[in-house]
Image (cartoon, rainbow, N blue to C red; front, side, top):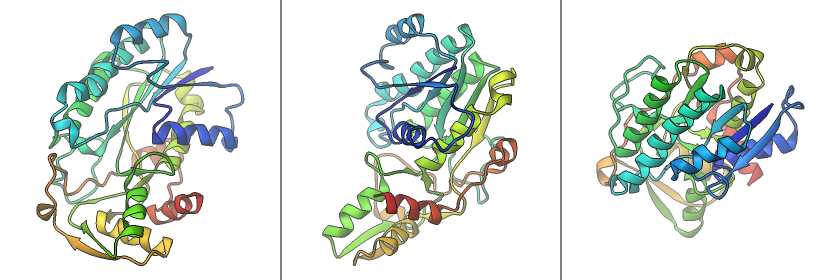
Length: 293
């Protein structure tokens, strides 16, 4: 069984690799994993995508690659759409043609944040920004192309030991400044990429996923609990023991090119029940990440 992971240099791709190196998930001994970056599989080149799968026999694709620069996407719309939509549509076409199972990572930013209770998989998407629009377009491309054998996993507020993310940014800024202003009126749930990676590999190793032809599904995943960016930063500072004062501010006081949903908590009930997942609270996950850092 050959599993292809795109985006090997991203937070999730590196977290999956770390998990496999640790060999802490059962039922994966018969699997071989191929990690690709832009050099091996260029998702910006649709012809390159096609030629790659002519030359390589793949059973499962885990698509971790994405255009994730939320604010830059407002200006760089074509590039964001190419990677988050067109390339995803091409992967779906290829997956259907070669009978490949597809797991695709999407985002909580497909929602507008007008709800006051966790978003379920049945809630109607309505993105506020270009990034969210292109990610939703990618979802719809999969659904229309592959009515079976794919899973779309929405997540949000992802951080890890790898790459650039909110945790590492706060650690860096707090070590250089006596005080920081942090947005307090956007509510979501931080997601430790290592925990997300663990859940994805559990799904891949599940016999139902591998053997049965199941309708394409949307699932939501993050850690448990809820937080504002301010509360998230406060917990980072507290665990790290850095001496820095944090000031809560409103979104309107920190304007950015792309609008953000004010509420983007995802319900994990469906994924927890279907794959028997025990999901850690975000504060516990954060402690684990900071210990590794």
